[in-house]
Image (cartoon, rainbow, N blue to C red):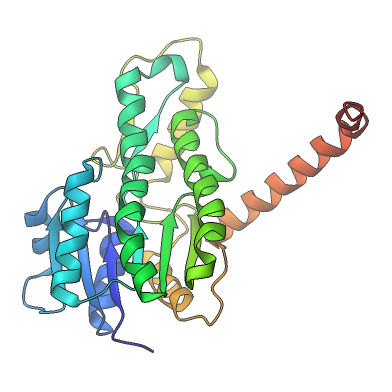
Length: 277
């Protein structure tokens, strides 16, 4: 294991991000970690490790992100792995969610990710090495009822990751999309997940879906510690994959989606090809 790698991890004050940071520091890596609340991050991790740099960052603020990246390079000399982990869950039908609420979701899930990538790439290109990990969700491959805006943001992350990998391959930079299923973290609690406050009675299927997720809190199948270990193993692979599913639930949902797409494409094959000259 290469303990000299420097990791930059967003959304690190709780959930998978916090678990990952703790595992990295225990293994001897240098870690810069971001949160909207640096005090909460420091309290969760501790401040007695010289390999740890807590950073208070607004990921939707391009200048804030640029400063955080520069501070990391100033302290550790380089960034080898950038993990875009910060996420924001929002549930409701499209007409139940305001424009403002929808934009907050995209600011954190999409534009925050783009800001980090934009500012870390010059350093990785200069090194001719690096690994960018975008933590999406299985919802970015197969969405569920009542989570249209969240799925849209995560699908955006899936798409940008796919093309980013092609764009930076010539620089020796690896890119991986991680799509976790349900993990036993605080993601389903009120401080991480927002449900519409203007529900429409007609949407009974959405209410049922949200109730199902509420009942899942605390009994999710995924183990955050095992997820953190899997991410570290991923980075140490000689040829890291572009896609990594985490959790047997994510694996099954992805396979089901592939089957659904294959069936749909074959059913309309004649009509699809009829548009050629």
